[in-house]
Length: 204
Image (cartoon, rainbow, N blue to C red):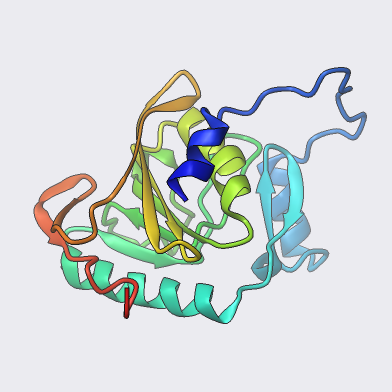
């Protein structure tokens, strides 16, 4: 896996030579929410990424099991100091409403019942990936960095690794590495809370 990541050198998106901007206007967050309210779209199967309404891929069984286990471990680690949201939308700017697999957010009095979290509420985003690995790193990584999400973790369920992106700067993350799953990890934004991911991939 590390060799596959290294071959990319940098997941920063680059425009294709000779590519032309799409003539289709971008969908705003307000327009997207209006379509959801009218029932024109199914929120559970879609997300808005940079003004484009995109379908979410179906989970594999391995992806689903790994994600639920990661959620259990994260909830056990954070106590009442943060909130772990599973498959819940986050509003990023005027043109994006991604639905991360897991989002670690600051506690809020309304428990986010009145409105979705925004970038300033987020401590860390976690995506579990198999076939979507490169898209999660390249497209989602750029999106989260552009909006200043402090940390972005990608669980590679195929190669049983967790890729950590941190320190957003000018639309990308300056730090990219892998978590050592044999060691306790400080929860992003909560240095006194310790996360044990050693059992994330049973049998490895």
